[in-house]
Image 1 (cartoon, rainbow, N blue to C red):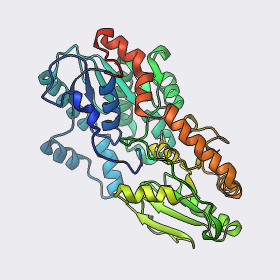
Image 2 (image 1 turned 90 degrees about the horizontal axis):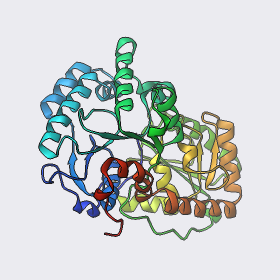
Image 3 (image 1 turned 90 degrees about the vertical axis):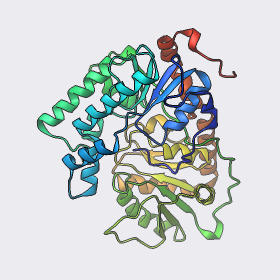
Image 4 (image 1 turned 180 degrees about the horizontal axis):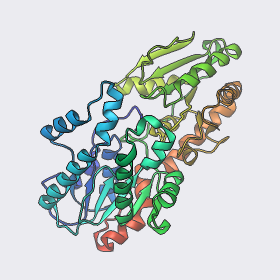
Length: 395
């Protein structure tokens, strides 16, 4: 869900935390079925709190094969969503979580859980939620493979999980609104905490050169080309080239099929080498992500950390990540005219674009690191743990 060219290593600061099966009871249990953000969030939690254990509820090989057989669809994307949202998979992950927690910690140990795709029954749980299923079903239909009774059962399960949690940490204001209005959660039990940049440390600010004769370079990173507004971007880019004939657009993380790529577009596909990704950020003049639906795209934080001005859409949590006219430009999603205008205006004023890039970098440093996320979580975590379990950030 969080398309971002991330460093997938584990932060060594998490070494103070117990691994699954190693730790004595006490502190927090950190639970996740696997997500690119998890190592960085959990490392930041471990820098502030005692961690009893890490818990993975993920399916065993036999369980995965069984769920895959019951959810099979010829189209891989449809199959993936049905597997991901399978009620049976949810039940199996929940059973795994409870069984593994019994081996790791006391039942009363608070659990900080990433996303609501399983339940740790009987344990006091604090949930970290990027978006609700109601948001994704209404915002991007392909993410909702369920209908009828199956969909209502999923909503009921989700509602019970949200209402039963000790506290909920929402990525964005939009998700908080959905939790309160769509699921009936007490507003006092929901905090907006955002997310951070997925890296061991922030990149050094790049010394950017004026585009000059080489022409401006626009950078797009996203695995889901259609949902990320890729087709809209190609339409807008053709118009941008009428004003800036030397402009280039680099597409990373995707290889759009059945697509006529206009002049100036370079399709780079998946790029795994961090040094190459870093170079692409340094050589770009602008980062663009015109998503049609995006709960909280971490790649925007990564681009801002590299000091790039951004042009993006007003989808879901994006307005929480930057301010229109400060760190970049935010336009209405799905509007190719607005996207074209934002790109042309940004490229027409390199000085203002550079100032936006510096403002984005400042915002990441001040608000969008995982340590700052944990600071915003702290009041609820302190209440769940008791002050005696809290560790000084400098310890």
